[in-house]
Amino acid sequence: MDIHLGHVVTPQDATSTNTSPSTPELLDIPNGAVVVDGSTIVAVGEASDILDAYPDTAFLDHGDALIIPGLVDCHVHYPQIGMIASPGEQLLDWLDRYTFPAEARFAEKAHAEATAEFFTDQLLRNGVTTALVFSTVHAHSVDALFTAAQRKDLRIITGKICMDRNAPADLLDTPESAVADSKALIDRWHGTGRLEYAITPRFAPTSSDAQLRALGELAADYPDVVIQTHLAENTAECDWVAELFPQATDYTDVYDRAGLVRERGVFGHAVHLSDRELTRLDEARASLAHCPTSNNFLGSGLFPLKDIRSKVPDLRIGFGSDVGAGTSLSPLATAGEAYKVSRLLASSTGSAPLTAADLLHHSTLDGARALGVDAHVGSLTPGKDADLVILDPAAGTAASGTPADPVLAHRAAQCTTTEELLFACLMLGDDRTVAGVVVNGTLVGTPGAGMATMAP
Ligand code: GUN
Ligand code: ZN
Image (cartoon, rainbow, N blue to C red; front, side):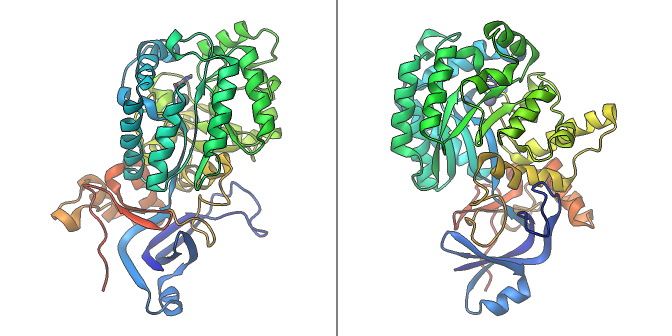
């Protein structure tokens, strides 16, 4: 058993007195404590009460650092970590010029294994303990990621990309091989420890209708697996989908007709959706992944989060880094960019921008809800997995005498409220702000960021 002392800030799960799933209030305990027994959180409360209730228990004092839930990335491509920051001309050109060549290298198993190792290290360094990840078309790219994640005890959901047209020949599968490979991977990995499978058609333009339908049938055989794909990211893509699928009512209907719109269906980007599509996604209890750094990098558009929430308040919306189109694996950077997008939309539509509480919700509990893993993670709640991030604006000071991020440390020292401090961390923070991560109960230090020391 371990006690973590620090400034506890967490979303709270809906209760009978707090019924809205997207309630933005945070539990805020400046002198707080989280008790971890093995891999599970067993208590959260005031430090004085916890220390009385758990005498003779080892504790780690994280000082003024924030203790928040493990962060959740709802949409990221691990094979693209090596081509991040490649400036294409919008989505389709960027895929052809950089993405497909980078993914073709994953035909080599050793390359997949080395990249999976690097990628999972970077997730940890950034405080991401749960992620929904795209692998490549190669089944062994999934094995490589699950193997690395299993070793590090990360909660990872991934799947083999399926695409049978409109991509280079060496990256294509067929409807039959996509189903056979996906099924074998589900049987091998789904539900092993913290690992789950996601049926993964890349997006409508790279799958024939026959492939989408075959994957829909596979999904029907496995009602609890995740489904992930891209939806309405870019207007040229939307026009192309309308040409390729003239029989469909709209982009969402392409997936819906194939049986791919359902609970635990996670649709990346979703920038350009009609009200009909939003209503249908909500009715199906599907989820959206908002990827603001990517949408800004590729000029895809401004995801109207507040507008969507006003129309379909219960639709699950998590945040995704979407690396390699996204520009950072840090959920703090993603949240910072989400704020700026909401700020731009606020100026043009009069809606209120996102608050620090909204941003933390979307980065943790709402992300967990979007992936259907909120029974296990997303908040600091007794009974959930012990995934904690120690967020310290002054990280590094103990080790070197100088904070790793002097501007954030300086700003944090002037903050007088938790909202202000959290907002500064979200706007300015990155991996340097993550002083430590507890992954399923085990504390992992982050190189270069400094670590809290064991108190007497
Ligand atoms: N749409 C289809 N594939 C991709 C991809 O790899 N990245 C992004 N951002 N959009 C896509
Ligand atoms: Zn993507």
